Length: 102
Image (tube, rainbow, N blue to C red; front, side, top):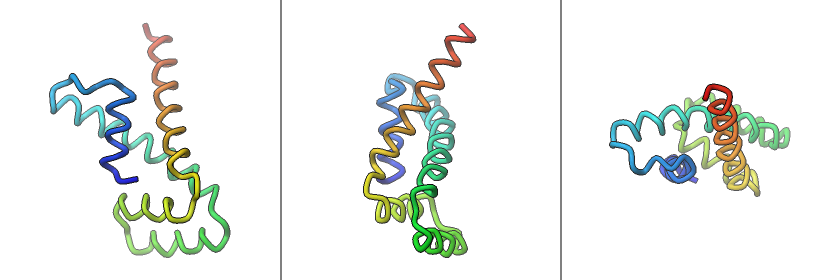
């Protein structure tokens, strides 16, 4: 999954396609950071010791987010489902927060 595909999932899930480009980009940026952090956290837990060592070597090279996502996709069979679950969790947490505020 590419960062653009992740952004598209966020746009669809948050139903923000109608926002101005600027507002949509700001929303995507905030949501992407939260989802990306959750994905990385969950994905690291699924790695074997050998994969974990390879991931550490990847991080030593200061990889792009794309490279990190590609690594996980290559090493975690259900990575797309993991991403979908993190997007769902993010949306649910957002709805719960909004319900408390509103």
